Image (tube, rainbow, N blue to C red; front, top):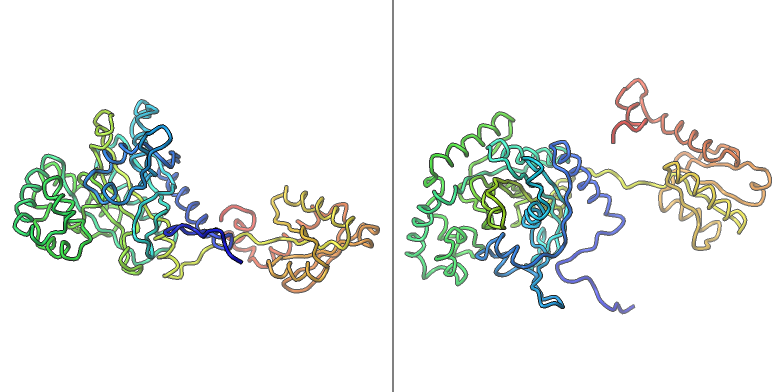
Length: 445
């Protein structure tokens, strides 16, 4: 078989036998975000290019090298979103959400696009969970979003992931830092890559984020931003640390963190793992108090983070973290002829309306092949419908785990089967245990 085409390099398919994992992550993230008061926003997959060039920063690798940009049929420059924050800010301004009081909290699960060299944990189409808080200048807002990310990792059972934090100051205290950086890198300019030579005048702090091995080596001895913070930024950073201490969240101050996007101010942070290779940052974020104004709004404090779903999934699989199994088939109805196939469809429809997972033959398999398929999909029960069962109005259901069979009425099949399935499920639980009883009655996941 010769395929017409294959998936584009840097993209992956999530197949039905794996989709339960990503759905589990998404559900955990949405639930956690809502517990913190962050509710979902959805923005378009493409925006006007200037949103990202102005918002993300013209000196960043994202804007200079990685964006998917094209002209539409009207001659307008359009870009597939490389990250989620700029679009959220645009929506916040366009729809006047600032009139609804502060803080405005929002979350999203979104696809993003960057032209990068594909490798483990880095794709050209990737997915990101993010949160944004608009209108809160307090250090407690910074600590809250950090604690939200921490709670997601704890909820999912992720281990050995460390929090690193830094402050890159405000525009005022960064002026002196930029001056010191520029003086330092000017003395090393013959060793800098071409991209960093361009950054030297526009934004020398971007050099600290360069992935070129020689530039990284030079950056190790560069001036440290924490030494140039103004009193307000120092106080803000100390307060963030005090908040994290009060919540019992462990962290390490890493003065080399600058993040890869130009809009950050003051607090920046990353959750990092050493178990997934070079792409060890699973979650990153911080404060961006100037971005709303830069995109046309009034001065508005803001903070948020982005968490890569593919990297998190890779880490969880490396650690052997357990995922819930995908929903299994409760009952497979085997039909022996056309008339019983109609009855199978009717029974299946009734049971599915009651929330049960039911399958029956839709490809014309033989009796033997249908039973083999029921085994393959792990059906908990099977029943066979034929002429005699339709005439007698009675049918036998078989427990595929222990082989036992019971006879029930076809007229009350839906209710009787649910009762039998529930009775059998209860055998596996200690009904003296409140948690077990709550679980079987649907009180918890």
